[in-house]
Image (cartoon, rainbow, N blue to C red; front, side, top):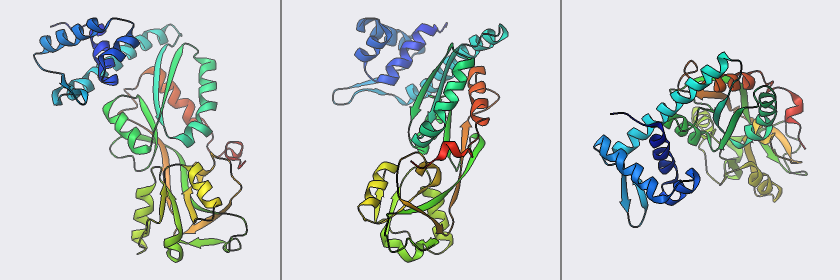
Length: 298
């Protein structure tokens, strides 16, 4: 059985969109043509790749999910073959798909992408944003080439970029403005916590210090936390790195106990990534995460 890469591309697009019409639109071919490719692929493999559900539309079967991962591997290998050939001719092309959480996208990647494009203008870059847990899932499914996440890094290969830590933020004229460090044990009911991949680090540290974490108020992003703190709704707890990506005029305080985490690049194997991805990762690793110009509070 010969697997045509064009058919594989169609299957990948349908699996991404979970909609025949949308897949056809993005592939610039007719809807019947897309349906025919999927049907032929199912017949040649002897399995059903999709279920047609009246309420939920297309759904991948269990074997379809496994084949999707293999199809992504095949596309990755195809991309790598072309990139290796281009690199031999000193003309790197292809595509890099990277997952990142918003603080990195805001503070680090613009500089990295600018430098990378100046050297490799023919490489396309696709940035997908999400939480650290989402990015780990995408790397695991091989829907992105690599990701930038916070620890723990699970079973992935990783390279540490930055050692981060949690801080407290309070508004001006707060009764703790003269305190050097805020002990979380004394203010458990006043904490506003910003989720963003450091939940595990915080929970473990509190448990180690016999502190019961009380979820008074939890938000999903730094901007919301800052607005809540401005309204005197509590003491904001957020990572120093994430805080650096947003404008604010809040007072920053160290916390007790100290909670740390690492930010790093993860992938299945740094040896197996494409040449374009390897070069992009090198640009990230060469970025000075301790450059104060990157972390100015606005």
